[in-house]
Image (tube, rainbow, N blue to C red; front, side, top):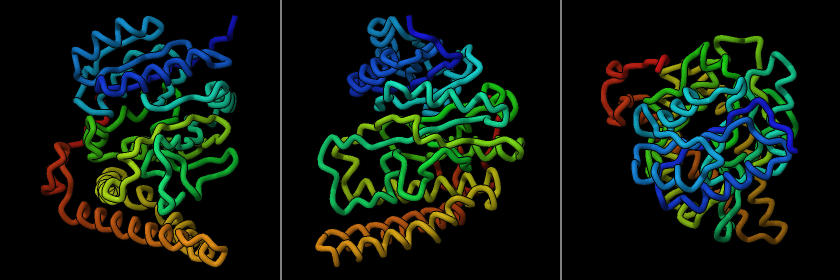
Length: 327
């Protein structure tokens, strides 16, 4: 008999095209060395999919998103349904390592830990392009070059592999609905970043921990390794960070980005050219991709800062943004 941990795992899904992915991640959760108390699948405003998932996955609690359409609303619905003191989130296209939940749960023995996230490795479903730099693995929702290699406090966790004490949501509210992906669009993201910063602002003496041993793989289809996707994702990240900075202030909203830009990216550019000297002719392509990615993200941030982004994704006056952290 496997041990159950006091963790509710929330998976959000929205389209029939990802049912195979969903099956895989649920199977990986049922194969954990230590099982979650419950698996909650939230279906985002898709009645047909809700019926199908409910019939197919008897091991899970399947509910509909009762809030705004999109990832933030779906996650908030999962929070409302969860009964465990720890609430974990994993993407519907992820695959959890057998000891993922054990490693994610263990740091909570320290009362100062209010959230734990783990490493996200890309599982490339087509060949990884040689030009794609590891510093930009965040483009495909994965851990990237420059993140800690051992257990360390961080500013924010990554949405594909994260968990929080229930008290975090009780204390600062849920995910901001003005942020968060909707369907297949990249759209405005960084809702987990904004939540983490809010929590840290409230509890300065507590930590969000990055634990690389808590591992999941994130499946990356071929369409996400195209240069057009890379550029668009970087632009949307810039827009999103502008909105996050408006919500929580630029000091906290850009603290990690400053270090990443000044410390990690220059090393990546130099590494690419050094790779050329070692015989890798694609090294300069990675250097160029880093420069392109930084420039595109910066442009997105500039556009978002100047024009403002409303909760309905239009570019309008920032004074029109309404923020409600108590969904």
